[in-house]
Length: 299
Image 1 (cartoon, rainbow, N blue to C red):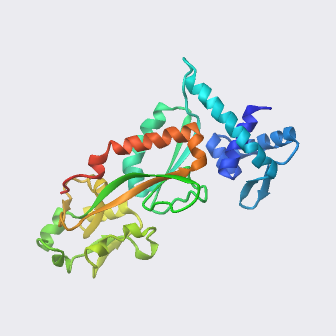
Image 2 (cartoon, rainbow, N blue to C red):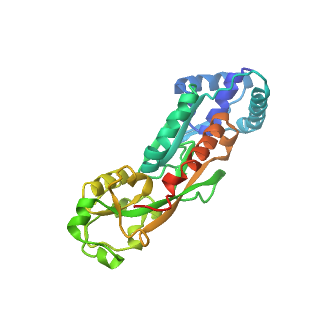
Image 3 (cartoon, rainbow, N blue to C red):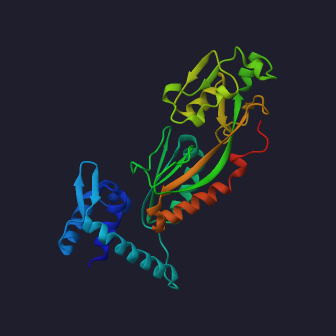
């Protein structure tokens, strides 16, 4: 039996769709379909039920899956143990993350990781919305809320600090702010309330309920640019505001907030070499950037 066909079977079982499996394998979806058809011909039974939402394992497929996973585990063990064998990661890994964290913290590190593994393709979805594991939108997701259920591996990736900031020109024109009460009458930059994708970003109300917003956006990077341009005060992650050393922290004691990033992936992915390696790389890279994420003093 052709191992390559079995490998395609594994990826389709894990991804649930031809397109998802093709992305993970770095091939066209028609190649996946052709390989599965060849394997089903060898086995003499359909391995998947074709449904509108994708491919679901048939009874024969469920019987075959643990046997093929055992073959994969044995192959990886031999590959890792064999002296002189050149190690290499191959295929695609899709990572979902929030916009600011994905662009400013993860992207530079993942670029380095990808350069060290030429056979690996990293897809980074840095979006101002939730990326769903349950919908197979990504292989690894970094989110502000801990996944509550499902066969999912979850770790706390890191805490990070947010602070109320203002541009020097804005602060000079609007007077000194010494207490939260002094925030009355100021203009603010924030999220669009009805498009907020997580309650963890409802931060400003913990400090002050603004009477006026000069600009609201679904993008934290757009908010940063607006605060930097002097449009008003805004709560920004320290790792975002650090792009402009002139931004001033406002009420650094009272207006300092901490949130948490969680990293998760389907449990089935923990046996896949490229997923394991990417997971561990992200944990290590983020742990090395605690000064950027959790500065002791901001401003």
